Image (tube, rainbow, N blue to C red):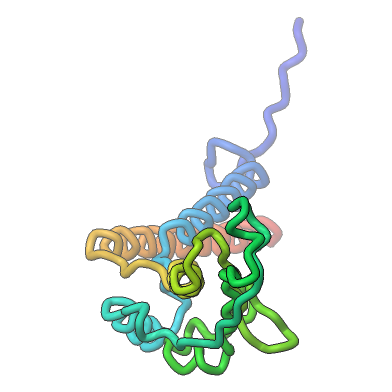
Length: 202
């Protein structure tokens, strides 16, 4: 006769051993946590008042509001033939915009990021831009101002998320509810296992 296989005892009539069920529950909890973070609103951990101020500023932003800075001129080193070699053609524009002047016209939420710009010069505590693609001094100086406006706009885009829409809020609430319901089920399941083990030992 063939030996009768011994089937491991499964507590509480479960279909799988307790250890396997516990592992599955832990994995499910982790997946729920990942989904919770994935679907959370982008601005959930940010200061709502600071975001509101920044968004109002951005809606009314005009590059002319930025500081004028200080611009000096030098001989252009770019192409241009004989025009570059003339003594009077110092058209390369070097514009310096002090950080303190920039901070005065942008929302506080952007302040920490200004000095992280690749155009930041620690010695002068300013953002420095150079332009020499035009033959006109004025055109090169204007290009530097455009570069400053572009940098400020980029800092805003990186720091301030788009306002969460109503459909995003609904999705977020739904996922939060499922996540918390899943955690409650896990806690109840673990509690029932503990009680079952205590009853078996007596």
